[in-house]
Amino acid sequence: MKISMKSDYGVRAVVDLALHYGQGLTQSADIAGRQCIPEPYLDQLLTVLRKAGLVRSTRGPKGGHALAKPPAEMTLGEVIGAMEGPLAPIGCVDDVQMCRQSGDCVQREVWQQVKEAMDTVLDSTTIESLAKKQAARDTQPMYYI
Image (cartoon, rainbow, N blue to C red):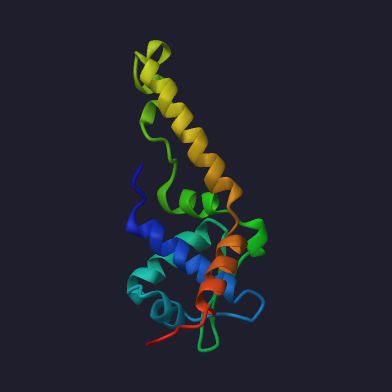
């Protein structure tokens, strides 16, 4: 399973918002600059995240974006799901009717296990845990010789 750049950027944006959670609204330009995401594309991603109920946005000169719920209550699975839709490695995992061989297909069983393993990891990884790891990396001192 390959995760798209759309999801990668979406997760980066959400983690950035988690790092600033409780500090008020964050402007798109600030997120774009810190995360190296083109701002027009970031605006599209934030719209998707807002429609999914993960981000709240306010327009205007003092506007910006914030997480719609605490980062501890938001999972990586929710963010990836909002960006990508269903994450089944093959369509018949989510829709048995898609293939007339689904009932007898041994491959489908493997793809189901792959989906379940992926869902387990994504749904058990909170945005808060990612933000804490990122914050720890950002604060490590740099030594130069």
